[in-house]
Length: 158
Image (cartoon, rainbow, N blue to C red; front, side, top):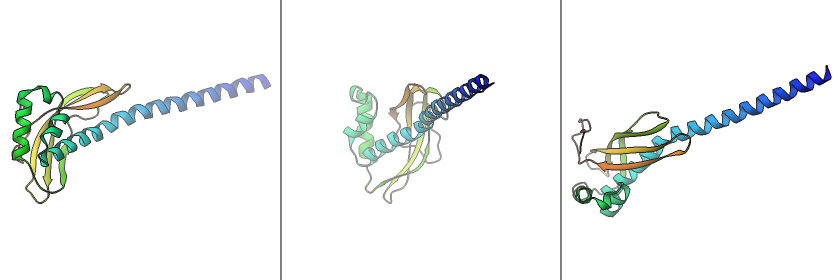
């Protein structure tokens, strides 16, 4: 009887330890998946702040491979001049590029922002969420659209 009780206690403790470890693993994976929206928001906010400041170099640095693309550098130069605004940047609305996903995605985020007391600016950002829930994600901004009308959806190409 005593041996059975000890064996049962060991099995119970092993099951509890296994359950706690499984819970911690699932929690870590979910934390990675749920934090990717915040990382995307931060990346887009930093890009928009650089744009509002007219900082072409910072804009190009935030867009993947922009320095090696003449078209991207030209777009950045135009946007930096056309959308330069005084004042602190506020994100009015940000529609993320993707919803919940355990793997990488490619999508378009729509951002409405304002600097100081200027009128809102709406733009689209092509975003790649590379990686997966186990190894981790990274956000890559691939392309920034020109300003679009406030009520417009993001274009397919820009």
